[in-house]
Image (cartoon, one colour):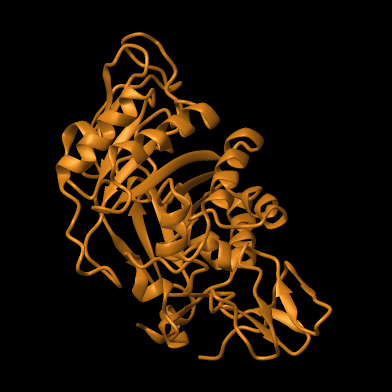
Amino acid sequence: MQASSYVARYWHRSDDARIQCDLCPRDCKLHDGQRGACFVRMRQGEQLILSTYGRSSGFCIDPIEKKPLNHFYPGSSVLSFGTAGCNLACKFCQNWDISKSRDMDRLMDQADAPTIANAAHEHGCKSVAFTYNDPVIFAEYAMDVADACHALGVQTVAVTAGYIHAPARRDFFARMDAANVDLKAFSENFYFKLTGSHLQPVLETLVYLRRETGVWLEITTLLIPGQNDSAAEITAMCRWIVDELGPDVPLHFSAFHPDHKMRDVPATPTATLIQARDIARERGLHFVYTGNVHHAQGDTTFCAHCGAPLIVRDWHQMKQYRLTPEGNCRDCGNRLAGHFDAQVGSFGRQRIPVKLGAAQRRGL
């Protein structure tokens, strides 16, 4: 399958005859035929192209809680897809087979923006999620899909590390209704050594989303034993979130499993996630969750005012839903932060692969 020749946005010609990509803080400078660090943005003649425009590693209908988003239409279904490549180089990547892929044939499915939006609408999905690899690197494709989705009343979700320059950030998130941003740690040393990037641009993205947009924001931190799981670092991060973003931003602590270039590091104990959740709640965060483990308290949404359990989950299955149609606590009337329908969704723990475009035509 040939790479797309879609002309990308966010670049300029530099004085030394190279083309500089202006999408993210890597600022890759390219000679003809060279690819950026993300692998998918490459120079072709006197232009920068997005080689994965219109192509995907596959489509799947998931529960929205899997993104994870716990305050964005709970129980609803989301059509998820990604492409290949990534602008970070995380040694602990849990999706490295997609994000670090250099095999363009992995992109087995082709679908334009209207096809994806129509599929989501026809399957009854509340939203479409740009996920699996970071949608920042296929921003133009994601934005076109988002426009097509909004035309049909379908919401859009970005699952991202938030590593993006300000001009592209404005354009990209203007098309998103919700975002889960990976705050991978709260130290520059971690970001530089284990992801090949920097912390500050991610913090700037988080502040921008919270203060300057209407995008619903949730945060995920993957806790890696011995790397970013100290009580001191978790405390500092939670204080920053409360001070800069506010106490109502949901925070998900998820468990690491040995993968990619960190197979010698043990999996995260459930006790570490529970301790992190306790620290976050003590520092004033209202909604703190534990992910990748079975922990009833860490799956439950409690009222920030009276403490009543409002949404009780078993993994991604809704077991109890005690919100009014307006999204208020049925005990005290306090409004729960987030986006809610009058009725909770019933998609549950399903995972449904969907064939679109080229894959559908080939009968794969």
